[in-house]
Image (cartoon, rainbow, N blue to C red; front, side):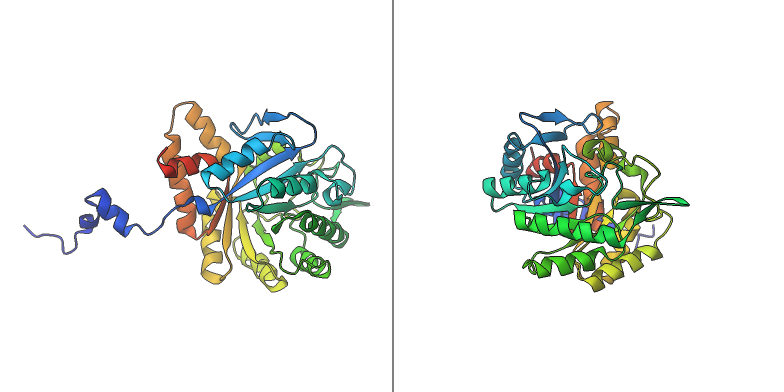
Length: 329
């Protein structure tokens, strides 16, 4: 009998051997946990399309933060749900806006926690778009440069509140440059920018829009978010952000865009972030509730796949569960 020249299975024969040769390792240090903070008091309200994810008021969110800290989750991404919305999203850059108040509260309770501020206008505008809307003869148009002015104001207000990282998600042209200049001018030259560099106009955002109350009131976001069919364009977007001073590059969503993560990882030396978005989370939760899948196995395999594709950091709603499972709980 002719034997195979190479026996790959030798290194798979025991758990110990598999552990020794494992190429990709998932750790709680890889996770960034989103948190949704809203005005009001005594609020802990589960988001119907995202089981296990809640709206928190400032007086109740300590419960969530304590759980993050106990599990070893070191970074949170803050989303605010404001009481007031208007056409230019003034609550986004209000010193007493919900995001700014949440940042101050988190830093007071857990000064060691890395607080990342999502910087956009969509949650704060009454039209739900990520910039200023202009009415033209051809219809509504999202203004780019005047939107940058407001986004820069929002970033500075978040940094003043104590944000460790600014994470602009608006996809306006030149947003990294505008925010970098504004932060530097305001004395925050050492505050990093985690750019949503490659953000696609995706169907995977549905549950998030319920969570953030940010569904556009007309049209869609296809004139500023990327076409899911395009890959080379992602490199142009990322290159612009690198040249403008980004400190991290993010790809959003995750599962359908792992090829883009690998492209960025191979080309750039900056840390690569992937956003394991709301529908990716909700689909797993829905299937698990039906008993169709092993939730733990699916989640850990998915997150490991994201790291293997090249992600250094993973924003995920699975953060708490994954942290427990990695502990063996």
